[in-house]
Amino acid sequence: MSTKPEPISGDSVPGQANARRGPLRATRAVIRKNPTANRVYRTSVGVVGTGTVLLGVALIPLPGPGSLIALGGLALLGTEFEGAKKTSRYANAKARVAAKAVAERRARKKAERQADPAA
Image 1 (spheres, rainbow, N blue to C red):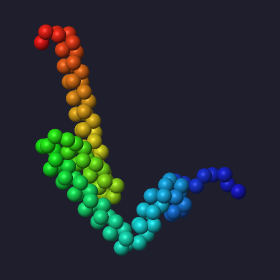
Image 2: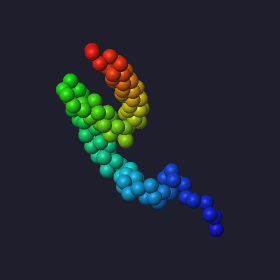
Image 3: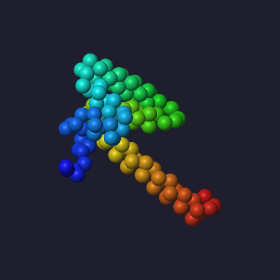
């Protein structure tokens, strides 16, 4: 008897490996087996994800988390579409760089105010 653990990839034993990783992955594996259900699921994810991205883009000029909503919609699309996943990774990396730049600028301004309290 072998003591090797089962692979986690899910390709060699559909259902078993995915069930270990979580019930949602197992459910998604079952949906993928049925072409009609898979098409309906992917279409639903596409519609909801696109709507979320569009809502976020529309909210960007207003005060609030418009860009975060758009990034969330892109992440949702990335769960099913490889192109959206790549775009989401790129957008998240750019957002991290921008957030770091804003934090550094705020810290610099705070240090300037503390150094010169008369200003």
